[in-house]
Image (cartoon, rainbow, N blue to C red):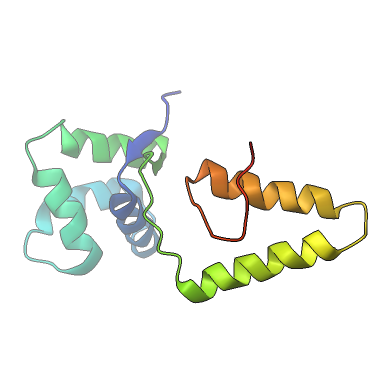
Length: 127
């Protein structure tokens, strides 16, 4: 059996909606070339399939046949000042707790922030 096809997130989400509306994948594959004038998820799928890059239509059909997953992508996150304060408060709560798991919670918070390259004043990085 072939591996799952890796596709951009928006294409996977559009295919999920299309499969919900059209569970017969043979029929769904037949419909895609007819969606040029459609909107919503149909337009997203059509535009991807009609592009001349990387055999996109074949890639879509393979995704329907063998399954698909979201290709790795960077994620951009905005942490508001309020969220930073909430993280600091959670960190301080665990730091002042006396139970045996507090150290692990603190390390987990620091590890997550360090791995994501996030520095928040009041929370020391792991080192």
